[in-house]
Length: 117
Image: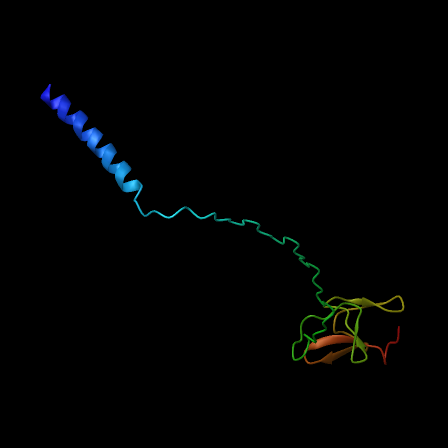
């Protein structure tokens, strides 16, 4: 019983002490404080995704290289017909055989000056 009484008295004392501390005799009145929470967020963002790529770049890739010839295209006045025979005036001329072929740097071209199209 004494134990319960001591617990009740300590609780009353704690409440009285808290009340006495929370209201001092020379306490000033509470000031009115205004808090402005107006936040302006600008979300107007412009993203430009138009990208222009200039792909019309010409590179001379045949400088110093003997490969990459195109069949039927002229190179220095002669026509490249590949490593195959060519028909001219109803006659087949084997690759590199006959007066119509000319050897330039190890490759055979059709000589347009001798055998015009």
